[in-house]
Amino acid sequence: MWYARCFPIRRGKLRVINAFWRAAVGDQGTLRLADLAHDGLKMRCDLSEMLQRQFYFFGTYFLEEDILRCWEAAAKGAKVILDVGANAGIYSLAALAIQPHATVHAFEPTAEIAARLRATAMLNGLDHLNVHEAAVLNKNGQAALKRFRGELGDNEGMNFISRDLGDSGTECVKTVCVDQFCQDHSINQISIL
Image (cartoon, rainbow, N blue to C red; front, side, top):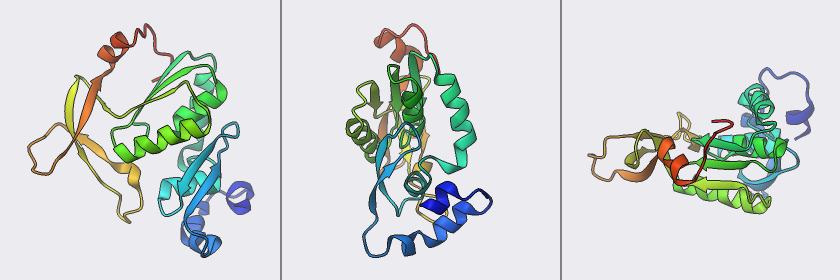
Protein backbone atom coordinates (compact mmCIF):
# COMPACT_ATOMS: atom_id res chain seq x y z
CA MET A 1 0.00 0.00 0.00
CA TRP A 2 2.80 2.42 0.89
CA TYR A 3 4.56 1.72 -2.41
CA ALA A 4 1.38 2.26 -4.43
CA ARG A 5 0.44 5.54 -2.78
CA CYS A 6 3.79 7.10 -1.91
CA PHE A 7 6.58 5.90 -4.19
CA PRO A 8 7.25 8.91 -6.45
CA ILE A 9 7.96 7.10 -9.73
CA ARG A 10 4.74 6.25 -11.59
CA ARG A 11 6.23 4.33 -14.50
CA GLY A 12 5.56 0.62 -14.05
CA LYS A 13 3.85 1.05 -10.68
CA LEU A 14 0.56 -0.52 -11.78
CA ARG A 15 2.40 -3.48 -13.31
CA VAL A 16 4.22 -4.08 -10.03
CA ILE A 17 0.94 -4.01 -8.08
CA ASN A 18 -0.74 -6.35 -10.57
CA ALA A 19 2.21 -8.75 -10.43
CA PHE A 20 2.62 -8.89 -6.63
CA TRP A 21 -0.79 -8.15 -5.07
CA ARG A 22 -1.43 -11.83 -4.28
CA ALA A 23 1.80 -12.06 -2.31
CA ALA A 24 0.95 -8.83 -0.50
CA VAL A 25 -2.44 -10.08 0.72
CA GLY A 26 -1.28 -13.62 1.48
CA ASP A 27 -3.98 -16.03 2.55
CA GLN A 28 -6.28 -13.35 3.98
CA GLY A 29 -8.70 -13.50 1.03
CA THR A 30 -9.35 -10.93 -1.67
CA LEU A 31 -12.14 -8.84 -0.11
CA ARG A 32 -11.02 -5.53 1.39
CA LEU A 33 -12.33 -2.12 2.38
CA ALA A 34 -10.55 0.61 0.43
CA ASP A 35 -9.85 4.08 1.77
CA LEU A 36 -10.31 6.27 -1.28
CA ALA A 37 -8.28 9.37 -2.02
CA HIS A 38 -11.54 11.28 -2.39
CA ASP A 39 -12.39 12.90 0.96
CA GLY A 40 -12.00 9.70 2.96
CA LEU A 41 -14.77 7.83 1.17
CA LYS A 42 -14.71 4.05 1.40
CA MET A 43 -15.45 1.23 -1.05
CA ARG A 44 -15.61 -2.52 -0.67
CA CYS A 45 -13.21 -4.13 -3.16
CA ASP A 46 -12.43 -7.57 -4.51
CA LEU A 47 -8.70 -7.51 -5.25
CA SER A 48 -9.09 -10.17 -7.92
CA GLU A 49 -10.72 -7.48 -10.10
CA MET A 50 -8.24 -5.10 -11.75
CA LEU A 51 -10.20 -1.87 -11.31
CA GLN A 52 -11.11 -2.62 -7.70
CA ARG A 53 -7.45 -3.47 -7.04
CA GLN A 54 -6.52 0.05 -8.19
CA PHE A 55 -9.06 1.56 -5.80
CA TYR A 56 -7.63 -0.44 -2.91
CA PHE A 57 -3.92 0.13 -3.53
CA PHE A 58 -4.00 3.62 -5.03
CA GLY A 59 -7.18 5.03 -3.49
CA THR A 60 -8.47 5.99 -6.93
CA TYR A 61 -8.51 4.96 -10.57
CA PHE A 62 -4.74 5.10 -11.10
CA LEU A 63 -4.87 5.30 -14.90
CA GLU A 64 -7.15 8.34 -14.86
CA GLU A 65 -5.83 10.41 -11.95
CA ASP A 66 -5.23 13.49 -14.13
CA ILE A 67 -8.70 13.28 -15.67
CA LEU A 68 -10.22 12.84 -12.21
CA ARG A 69 -8.49 16.03 -11.04
CA CYS A 70 -10.07 17.91 -13.97
CA TRP A 71 -13.44 16.35 -13.11
CA GLU A 72 -13.11 17.46 -9.49
CA ALA A 73 -12.27 21.01 -10.59
CA ALA A 74 -15.37 21.01 -12.81
CA ALA A 75 -17.48 19.70 -9.92
CA LYS A 76 -16.86 22.79 -7.77
CA GLY A 77 -20.18 24.59 -7.61
CA ALA A 78 -22.01 21.87 -9.56
CA LYS A 79 -25.63 21.21 -8.73
CA VAL A 80 -26.58 18.30 -11.01
CA ILE A 81 -24.05 15.75 -12.27
CA LEU A 82 -24.67 12.85 -14.64
CA ASP A 83 -22.12 10.02 -14.56
CA VAL A 84 -22.82 8.00 -17.71
CA GLY A 85 -21.27 4.54 -17.76
CA ALA A 86 -20.48 4.94 -14.07
CA ASN A 87 -18.96 1.53 -13.48
CA ALA A 88 -17.76 1.54 -9.84
CA GLY A 89 -18.66 5.22 -9.59
CA ILE A 90 -15.27 6.78 -8.93
CA TYR A 91 -16.26 9.90 -10.90
CA SER A 92 -19.50 10.19 -8.91
CA LEU A 93 -17.57 9.79 -5.66
CA ALA A 94 -14.88 12.28 -6.67
CA ALA A 95 -17.54 14.86 -7.56
CA LEU A 96 -19.38 14.38 -4.27
CA ALA A 97 -16.12 14.64 -2.33
CA ILE A 98 -15.69 18.14 -3.79
CA GLN A 99 -19.37 19.13 -3.93
CA PRO A 100 -21.21 17.08 -1.27
CA HIS A 101 -24.61 18.73 -1.82
CA ALA A 102 -24.72 18.15 -5.57
CA THR A 103 -27.19 15.63 -6.93
CA VAL A 104 -25.47 12.87 -8.88
CA HIS A 105 -27.25 10.50 -11.22
CA ALA A 106 -24.98 7.55 -12.04
CA PHE A 107 -25.99 5.29 -14.93
CA GLU A 108 -24.60 1.75 -14.94
CA PRO A 109 -26.36 -1.02 -16.89
CA THR A 110 -24.46 -4.02 -15.43
CA ALA A 111 -26.61 -5.23 -12.54
CA GLU A 112 -23.88 -6.39 -10.15
CA ILE A 113 -21.74 -3.29 -10.74
CA ALA A 114 -24.74 -1.01 -10.15
CA ALA A 115 -25.51 -2.94 -6.94
CA ARG A 116 -21.95 -2.42 -5.69
CA LEU A 117 -22.20 1.30 -6.43
CA ARG A 118 -25.45 1.44 -4.44
CA ALA A 119 -23.67 -0.35 -1.57
CA THR A 120 -20.82 2.18 -1.77
CA ALA A 121 -23.31 5.06 -1.62
CA MET A 122 -24.97 3.47 1.42
CA LEU A 123 -21.63 2.75 3.12
CA ASN A 124 -20.69 6.43 2.82
CA GLY A 125 -24.14 7.88 3.54
CA LEU A 126 -24.32 9.51 0.12
CA ASP A 127 -28.01 10.34 -0.14
CA HIS A 128 -27.39 12.54 -3.19
CA LEU A 129 -25.97 9.66 -5.26
CA ASN A 130 -28.76 8.10 -7.31
CA VAL A 131 -27.77 4.91 -9.11
CA HIS A 132 -29.80 4.03 -12.20
CA GLU A 133 -29.40 0.51 -13.56
CA ALA A 134 -29.66 1.62 -17.18
CA ALA A 135 -27.62 2.49 -20.24
CA VAL A 136 -27.84 5.93 -21.82
CA LEU A 137 -28.86 5.99 -25.48
CA ASN A 138 -30.82 8.36 -27.69
CA LYS A 139 -34.16 6.80 -26.72
CA ASN A 140 -35.79 4.95 -23.87
CA GLY A 141 -36.12 1.22 -24.39
CA GLN A 142 -33.80 -1.76 -24.27
CA ALA A 143 -30.38 -2.72 -25.55
CA ALA A 144 -28.15 -5.76 -25.35
CA LEU A 145 -25.43 -5.82 -22.71
CA LYS A 146 -22.30 -7.43 -24.10
CA ARG A 147 -20.01 -8.60 -21.34
CA PHE A 148 -16.29 -8.35 -21.85
CA ARG A 149 -13.64 -8.76 -19.17
CA GLY A 150 -10.50 -7.82 -21.10
CA GLU A 151 -7.67 -10.00 -22.30
CA LEU A 152 -6.81 -11.34 -18.85
CA GLY A 153 -10.42 -11.78 -17.73
CA ASP A 154 -10.03 -9.56 -14.65
CA ASN A 155 -11.45 -6.25 -15.89
CA GLU A 156 -15.18 -6.25 -15.27
CA GLY A 157 -15.60 -2.65 -16.38
CA MET A 158 -15.29 -3.28 -20.11
CA ASN A 159 -18.88 -4.27 -20.84
CA PHE A 160 -20.62 -2.42 -23.66
CA ILE A 161 -24.08 -1.89 -25.14
CA SER A 162 -25.37 -2.99 -28.53
CA ARG A 163 -28.71 -2.19 -30.09
CA ASP A 164 -28.84 -5.70 -31.60
CA LEU A 165 -31.23 -7.69 -29.42
CA GLY A 166 -31.39 -10.60 -31.89
CA ASP A 167 -28.84 -12.95 -30.30
CA SER A 168 -30.33 -15.80 -28.31
CA GLY A 169 -29.34 -15.49 -24.69
CA THR A 170 -28.85 -11.75 -25.04
CA GLU A 171 -28.91 -9.93 -21.75
CA CYS A 172 -31.34 -7.05 -22.19
CA VAL A 173 -30.90 -3.88 -20.17
CA LYS A 174 -33.00 -0.75 -19.83
CA THR A 175 -31.97 2.34 -21.81
CA VAL A 176 -32.78 5.95 -21.04
CA CYS A 177 -32.55 9.09 -23.12
CA VAL A 178 -30.92 12.00 -21.26
CA ASP A 179 -33.50 14.50 -22.55
CA GLN A 180 -36.40 12.35 -21.39
CA PHE A 181 -34.66 11.55 -18.10
CA CYS A 182 -34.15 15.26 -17.37
CA GLN A 183 -37.78 16.00 -18.23
CA ASP A 184 -39.00 13.14 -16.00
CA HIS A 185 -36.82 14.32 -13.08
CA SER A 186 -37.45 18.07 -13.51
CA ILE A 187 -33.78 18.74 -14.30
CA ASN A 188 -33.43 22.07 -16.10
CA GLN A 189 -29.65 22.19 -16.25
CA ILE A 190 -26.84 19.64 -16.04
CA SER A 191 -23.64 20.98 -14.48
CA ILE A 192 -21.37 18.10 -15.57
CA LEU A 193 -22.00 15.13 -17.83
